[in-house]
Image (cartoon, rainbow over all chains, first blue to last red; front, side, top):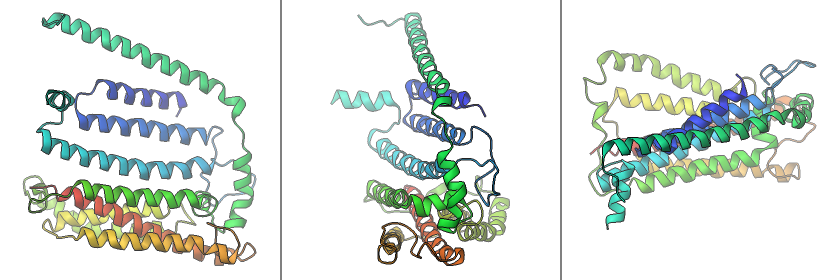
Length: 111
Length: 243
């Protein structure tokens, strides 16, 4: 896949983050941005199109293993960030009775 | 001035969207410029080094595992630590005084039909076995502790479909996870006494690939169990929100 398409995925995430009115949708948009970044890194590690870096044959092209190792870290940390944000969403719902940004911010300003 | 009529509101929202899309277009232009300059920056030094020396130095046929568990073990340790901290955070945020019980959607027979439950029973042991396979063969084939741990955690989550009122003690899970994390830290530090360097393979550089793979398998199994327990604890914390 062309790296430009991963830019578009990241920008779709930004657009959703700017326009979404729901907290849970905002969390999903952060995950979309994260997926775009993961795709971008995996592309950068394999620009000349090699094999997977497992059980390598000498003098053949392989994909760069370093971005792949870094992206495992990103996936695990992204899942923990998502779970923390969703748990905070549940707490926000129990406190305000809604997960819309307008309601939450409006009630906060009114007090 | 407050605009109340609906048409002016629509106009304002259209203008906002146009401005936003313009800003995103500018961001795309910046990304595109960075991408055009990439050819000058791109090099294969790291890739060449890993493909030439990694298998001999770390005893791992999977170069990603050789980076995760040997060259950049420091990264992996803190990644596992962040998972532990996030699990503690989720459990701390989710504590409440109301009597805890599992969420209702698992028990609802209209939403989880019998067919699904039956297939869960069939698939559960296969998923568990596949998870352990991915963990143990992490240094030979694609996979490793993090990926296999996620598969094992998914298998455990399917268990909740079979027995919806299954009671899980989160505190016990997190305690076991903490001890496993301490064991990972001790195993990573042990190389200081055998090799004189922190956070690398325990066995000396000259030893055979078989000896080195003992360390890789043990560390992969520990990390796999830690990740599986962490994800299980997170899921249980969400499940306890049913009230």
